[in-house]
Image 1 (cartoon, rainbow, N blue to C red):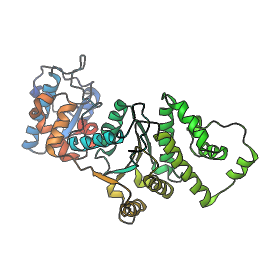
Image 2: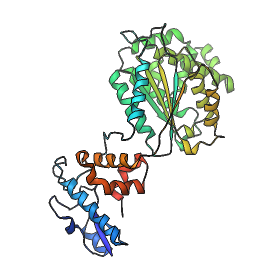
Image 3: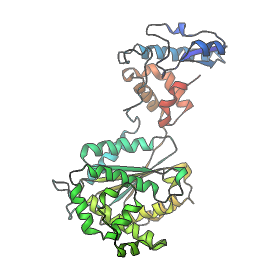
Image 4: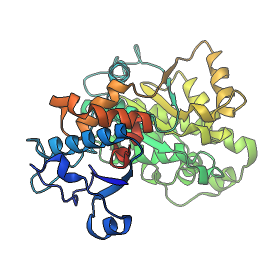
Length: 377
């Protein structure tokens, strides 16, 4: 036998408020259901216990649809997929907020650095299995409050299909930072200091290496001397670019209230990026910069280059490394999340059955909301 329950995420679901849960169940063939039921899906029933669970799920759908918070014109409660609170991450978010406030220590009223109290770069690592919400935690714990505090937040993400491109995620982050700076009221001062700090060939080197950052480097016709300098290759060129990037960050961060550089999916990073992150973290001349990296813990064994770099950095006395481990959600956190998504925060107990099924079927935060609609008994 088959029993039908409403898909909670489908605004096309023909169930209307006030309809009794017993009316939701119809024994139909699979082909008939496909032709007529749109947002209703089949569930294989194997026991009387499962029938009871299905009835409870239907009751949840009815309660959600009758909630005073439901969207007008939609017959079944449409889950809230945006601006969801990160349930079970309150302590981590509070900690990240504290890190932002520390970045602002030693700032003058106009946002420039007080050289007597400047804070050196700090490395913050966020680890956890795929789907546990590492990126969401960084966004809500750092990016959103950074925007409100007038600080810069820029991020880049490694792609498994772009591993042949060294420094790709870091350059994406710098391109994002450039977009922030171009509309910042201190951009002209920053560009002027870049001219004073860098020779022509160095500005060209940075502009060529970091696509999307060209607006920071006023360049006229390339002189013969600059052309000869750019001809350098190999390890010497890599070290020169690394040194130039650190000096560039010093100029930029000295003129901001604070800056966060976020590199996601470090498990796919290249050696050049890991070396650059290490050199930045060890550079005491770069003020008020928070380096944040996220990676899939289950894809980084002890022999992984990232694990080796982390251990090596941990042996350095002059560097601060903080690691946040993002774990799977508890059953109570899942229940709060499902209630939040269905706009039933004031009646969490009503979604208990659904929350238990979601937790049993998928224990990872990022995927919870997208999979509530496909939960089956």
